[in-house]
Length: 470
Image (tube, helix red, strand yellow):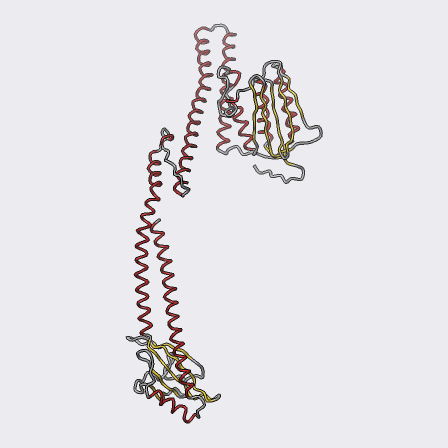
């Protein structure tokens, strides 16, 4: 992080230094050009109104008498139309025989022209050709050059200062960045050490103290602690799930083993063998249902059971559930009733097979926990854009402390009624199906007064676009 910051700072300082240096150089050149133009205009203006015969002679007189100029290596020359030097402040110098572009060959032009002459081993010269005019007649030019040595010294000092101050700024910022980052990285270092110590057994012990500020390290520590909390809860559920699954499968296996051993040792009558085999088959069926439900939930969590959604008529779905529930309830003396909207057809987008499984689990659950002579009611209604399937019974009911856990796997309220209550996976499957349809499920219950489950599903209307993707 420090290296990236310093590299970025170096690039920024370098770009600013280059822009500053170039801007200063351009400003100094503009000042030089302005001074040259002012000087040549002054010289040309001093001869204004004179005849051509005396104009160049008077101008040369001024040049040869040594017109004072500011700066070393300053020169003034007067050139004729062919570019020949008529006179100069240093006539024997030979510096004024041509221009930068093509010295000594191109004749002067009747326009103001600035140029720079490169001199190996010496400071460059900056010059101007200023035309001499008599009316519209072009007589020659005044050429003035000044040395760029003062400008070059200023730019050299500026470059040195920029490099020194830039280097000091980088060193200072590097030290400050290392100090600040070291403080900022302390929580991350502690976090890395904690992460190295994490195992499945000590998730609850690896929390870091949370800070009051809202800085990035503080947010990361809070996210880390929240992650450990979720992992710890997931590990506890996994352990509980494994223990419950082992317990549920151990019970029928124990029964199978005991009945089989008794039959092998003592049974001689074929009817007794038959009775033993029928009991064993019931236990095998029970284990098979548990294993199928576990596989269903495992595949659903792994995303291997995509929903094949289509338009589902809930009126027809509940009629089918009513017919099945009615048959199941007759065997126990329980009345099953159905309440549907009189004229309205309620439709949802969903997997009809899974929705039927969800409803049948709720109806079976109501019948299972309702004593003989009770009733189970199926009802379909609408609340805004939600279709509501309600399954209520007059059964044993549940205490409030159980309501938040009844959708957990293998959770049973009465542990002693194992044969009646099943494996405790039915409501877990119901919850998964509801979540897969982007719905929600609620339950209200009172001990000895019965329970009511309500499933809320997004409703579709005839003019609403239908998405059949799974």
